[in-house]
Image (cartoon, rainbow, N blue to C red; front, top):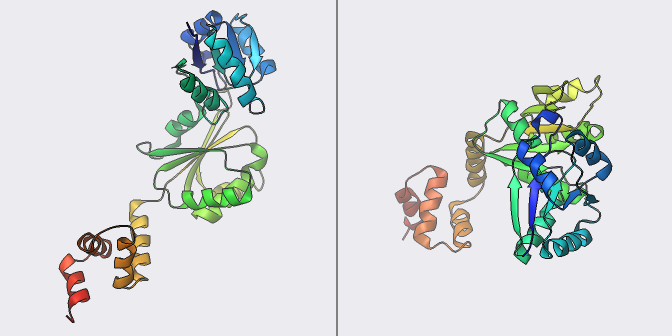
Amino acid sequence: MAGKLYLCATPIGNLGDMTPRVVETLQMVDVIAAEDTRNSIKLLNHFDIHTPMTSYHEYNKVEKAHQLIGQMLNGQNIALITDAGTPAISDPGEVLVRMCHEQGIIVTSLPGAAACITALTLSGLSTRRFCFEGFLPTEKKEKKLVLQELSAESRTMILYEAPHHLVRTLEELYEALGDRSVTLCRELTKKFETVMPTTFEKALEYYKTEEPRGEYVLVIEGKSFEEKRKEEIASWEDMSIEEHMAHYEAQGMDNKSAMKQVAKDRGVGKREIYQYLHGNE
């Protein structure tokens, strides 16, 4: 009978956030797959856990996943932990989880700390709708496309950033999104936890004299529906009604549906659009 994969959340700073269920599971499994065994051994020693560890990280995630899958198919139970927080979130663990599903291996997640959710709840920004971007891409073209998408995002956005890249990222976000409310969170759950509600402009001014320290979570205000609506109206105004109709018909709408949508976009009645298009007939 195949073993299971246990995704075990570990503290993001405060050891008091380790759950009894995670401690019990890490003691029970046959092997712990850890992002950095040198870092994780400190955690295991603190909780008197003596289970064997093996490394599982970004640079061996595919090859090692095959090995771990083989062990689970042979009946071993394996726990996956990351350096801090919940495995498989912006983490190579997602590869192992997918491969487990492909092989019919049961995966279960033991909830716990996650920096993105912790920061969101502290941000003071809307929590009803949000999206998680993780780290921005390093490749310039891909980053440009992501920033373009984010510029139109109406949900609250959550990003991660390292201290030595923070100012550059704030500059790129400011340029792409305009000045927005942003809450900068660092040292979450630790003694010197810092939560700074500000704006891109004010943050950049602040970091002219202050050196960024610690890993950051950026929680960013989404574009308001009112602002998006104004932009949409402005874009339609640049089109003729015929072009506007052609835009929707090219997407497969019939003439009647396209006319209804054009009227809605422009804030007028469908009859007005009909009369414009057929007035001379």
